Image (cartoon, rainbow, N blue to C red; front, side, top):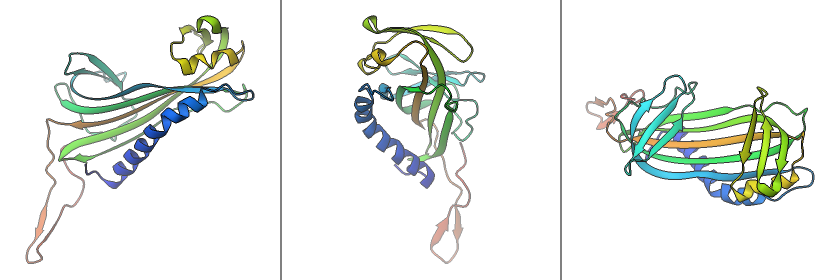
Length: 221
């Protein structure tokens, strides 16, 4: 796999994070007296799929894999540094997701969502990757640790009752109390290759030198 340096660096960081996250999830699941937090892997998949629809308003991309199952990938509208995709494209996609909860002081700085993206070329096919951290702050309105149920109040004062199914998150519930402030972070790491298009870089041959160069970025994104 060959890609520009910035893409390789991002992918290397993503690969290291993917190896460390399972260990981190177990460590963070341990209730702490002074500072409680938990993290769990909620998605880890490599597949080939066809782009069904792209919602320009929400940024959701609907994919259909080889088994006919539908996959939704959220690409924020603010992300522009990715190869262009369209309905009908065939892509190879790697998807990795975690969700974490962190009990924080009520007066701590508000969490901020961030997105990092890059594009390049893999085997002459357009290649892109994106790592997004979607963060929001909620307040605990009720908690039933015995039945793994928690009720939260979001930034818009909307109340949501959630049944927690993952053991790592269930371990956090006994440490929560009504009125706690919790920062919830969803991390999505997506890497994809567009299989039905090939990029041919512009090439200039320097006569008599026996060398060639490819000025500028590849076209066809």
